Image 1 (spheres, rainbow, N blue to C red):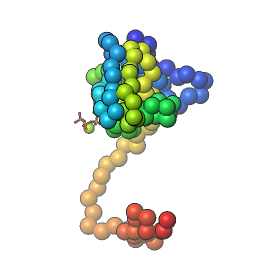
Image 2 (image 1 turned 30 degrees about the vertical axis):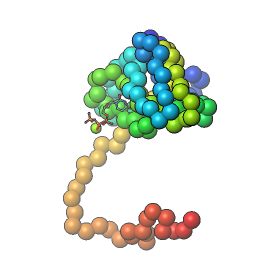
Image 3 (image 1 turned 135 degrees about the horizontal axis):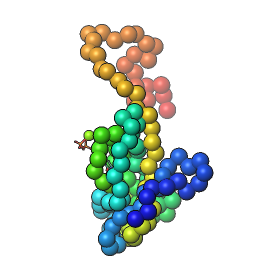
Image 4 (image 1 turned 90 degrees about the vertical axis):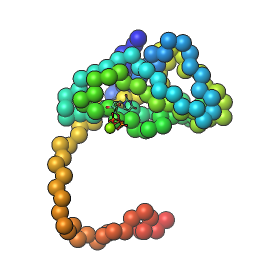
Length: 133
Ligand SMILES: O=c1ccn([C@H]2C[C@H](O)[C@@H](COP(=O)(O)OP(=O)(O)OP(=O)(O)O)O2)c(=O)[nH]1
Ligand SMILES: [Mg+2]
């Protein structure tokens, strides 16, 4: 099985290939966990995000249900892609097809601290569109 790879010099994403034994047909509305045939050990400062490919989304309505998927640095299992068909037609995933892409990110090492009061800001508790349309 082809390992993840960048399809252009400065591509942010490494394309992931479907390691399915036989073609998988996704009916409209159906989801499936697709194997990619590889596992990895990242430095602990990194995560990997599994993101949809825009071409599959635009042409066929195929996207990642849990987008962006999170691969933890301590995960040692096979990387899998949770695809869903939001299109109108059945979609067939062929072995070796590029189904999603993986982007690496640095993860700040954060220690949460519990406090009884928060600092003031102009926004305060306003959110969810409180600044208007
Ligand atoms: O698209 C994805 C998302 C996750 N994973 C793997 C790697 C990740 O480190 C692990 C757990 O993912 P996540 O934390 O999103 O799922 P969870 O439901 O919280 O499971 P867990 O309790 O195992 O953390 O599953 C994938 O292979 N593909
Ligand atoms: Mg988790």
